[in-house]
Image (cartoon, rainbow over all chains, first blue to last red; front, top):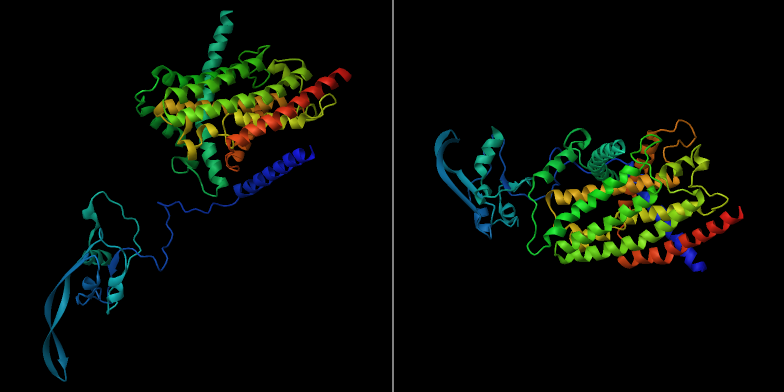
Length: 156
Length: 328
């Protein structure tokens, strides 16, 4: 009989403790972020799709060597380049030299597994992970990114 | 006579409006309260403080199609939501909000409310059985066994109070407690020293009767999808929801009338309808608070609580009160 009542009392006590905790929590400030109106900064290590890095002049740092394209296990990077001639002064003489310039850098994000081999393989620090995570669409064409175009849009 | 019938018709219209408004805004209060307890804001996008959320939800429910599943018992399926809502509204007719704000003061008011409350269990049974869904049937079986086992301690407690006060008229029950907090049935009296325990029993039984957490086995989402209203959509579901919240208001009103002095002020001054509303909304807040604190019980724990603890103690209280009433 004593055990019966002590169980009831201990039960009631634990219920009261629980109620006390939630009552205190009721008056504490909220900890959530109202997502579409406010967002939190993504951490340094977050891996979104890749993005081209620009130099000081606003042009892509990429020299179109194609290392990333070769490193990609899923073959989702395709790039194209053209060679342009430019003049440079060496020891008082003006010489014309050739250089590759990036004309197209497409990423097929539908097959990308975010392994990061492309970023790792780049010797010119020309690509990085973006912090983009609001990616949702019903059409797969929306995930074929033209990174060169995105860079220009960012600059304009 | 025709005047009293008109009186009742007007009262029912007001009761429907009151029940619907309460159901809508208690959902809002519940969601906001749950949010606060879980340290998030709750619905706050539609209108200031999210106050336009209930009309939006109502519009959504009303514009949806009512799908009757194949193989369902059509009559029971359609009747069940109505049966959940109507008794709840009918109970409002006899609840005295203040000395003058009462549609029909009946000599058997307590009896009437409990009779209608029992119909709520039937609605759940019809819904679960009629929708021909295994989750629905399981939920119906659970809810009915729960309702039956919790009605017993509830009614025994009510009998104790009726014995003490000698009336089943809700208005007279409140009148007997007028004049301040020391006259309330909540406090132990000479003839019934266990009144606070009786209040606790009645409170727990109200939670169980209204199928609220931690006794919401009838719609245990994690086990039974949505319980008895798994197959209901649109306004069928809406009616169940409204009935549930109307029952919560009635449960809170009953506790207020039986234990907390109805429309009386704790200090015995200015009795008015506002005290009644304040008391029921404080009780409803405590229901919400309890819901978001405790996890759901098991069916065994639920039935054990009723049959092994609540019924013996309420029976003991009944016998003790009966004996002491003879002495004093």
